[in-house]
Image 1 (tube, rainbow, N blue to C red):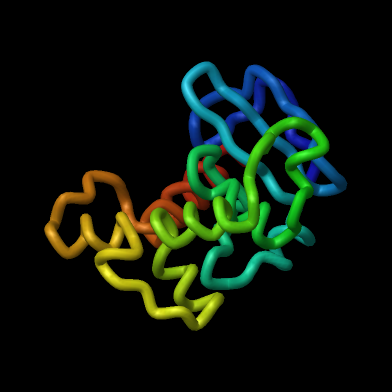
Image 2: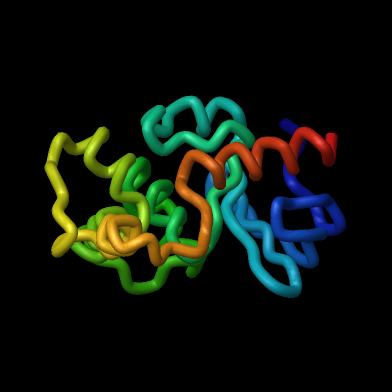
Length: 144
């Protein structure tokens, strides 16, 4: 992978800034959203239950996958300023519960995961982790 750059297409639009967090770990922001781009070698290290084919991880919830995989990698560059390990786990339980259960072996309930509760009630309006990963992979493939 070549390093992400300003103007490149991301799953959220064209990047208006890119910041290197660590070797093979970049944050790309757009006017409306952004996320973390992992190199192929870094992405291969993400547990398969969480791995997004294109190496893109959105900024609101999936940052916790990157932080779980490499604790404190995002903090030195100021991307993540205050997560404790408990906060990382809380985000993963609430917003990436299926991957969380596969990785940790912990069984979540409707009371311990916001997404599981929403799924049970048919209230979730955004895509499942698998659908989102497929969407991101397709958008990245289209950009190449």
